[in-house]
Length: 172
Image 1 (cartoon, one colour):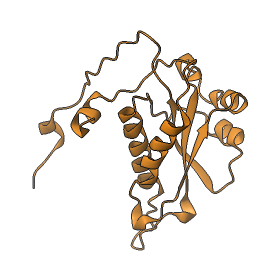
Image 2 (cartoon, one colour; image 1 turned 135 degrees about the horizontal axis):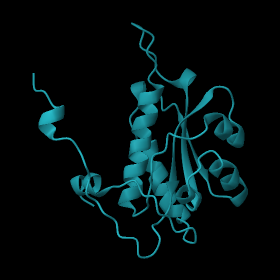
Image 3 (cartoon, one colour; image 1 turned 180 degrees about the vertical axis):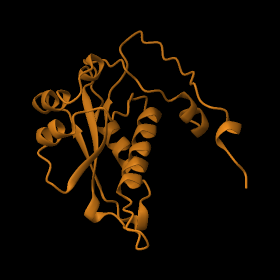
Image 4 (cartoon, one colour; image 1 turned 30 degrees about the vertical axis):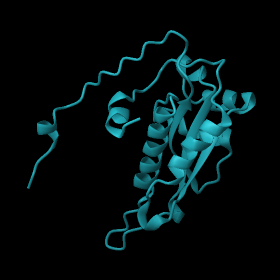
């Protein structure tokens, strides 16, 4: 898909077909796009977790209480390691959140390009998710998204409500 069309048509899908898993090859294409994301000093301080097994899906689904979320056949989780990310010497700013957000953006755009729906979720119970995934103290979750195809008959409305360019840009 042409890139401008891709970013203009991508939506946050809240309607998943639970009976249509995404093929492993397609998931790997999506993950490879995340792998190619830029990061400060190319440290790549992330790990992507793909949850597909029924037992793990049950645990991870418990951290966010929306029925549409529970229907997705896969959940993708972007985690990062603060101690592996670049830190600016002038003020101690750590790049982990920026690095993880860029990787997540690559992942959701790649999914759209493959016809796979996503919805970037931040409103989850972080402690419940950490326990479900058995994360170590150094590994932080930066975002989760379901991965899946829309239910049959779903009509994707791609109109977006966005501010005008003139409202958000200042040329200096």
